[in-house]
Amino acid sequence: MSSLGLTSFGFDFGSDKKCIRINLANNAIMKIDGIKDRNVLVINLSNNNLKSLSGLTTCVNLKFLNLSSNHLDSLAGINNLKKLDELYLSYNILRRIREINNLQRLRILDCSYNKLLDA
Picture 1: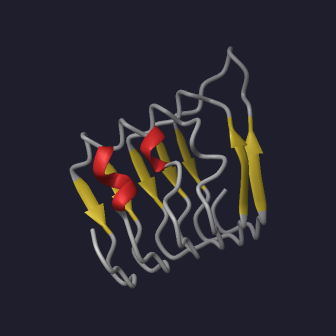
Picture 2 (picture 1 turned 60 degrees about the vertical axis):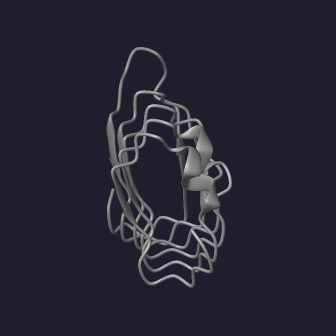
């Protein structure tokens, strides 16, 4: 669903179907209305207009998250994503990333091209 001009997104596949990978890159998404499938492992939301992580915090099994090139100024709620291995946050407007301190499994972090004051 990449490059479709979407402005919002949310889904619930129910218990009988599983989605493990979501690519919503290169849209105009400003809001995630909620992803209720706990089986999702990979989400690419790069190049959108997101300002917050609301709607993603229920993806507790997520391992890969790309939020590069959005309008994020906070990572509130990211501490719910304890299984994250890779997190891409480049080209946002982040000033602080303290919220990632509890992500013990995080191996790769890209927060380049932000206005970070501290880590």
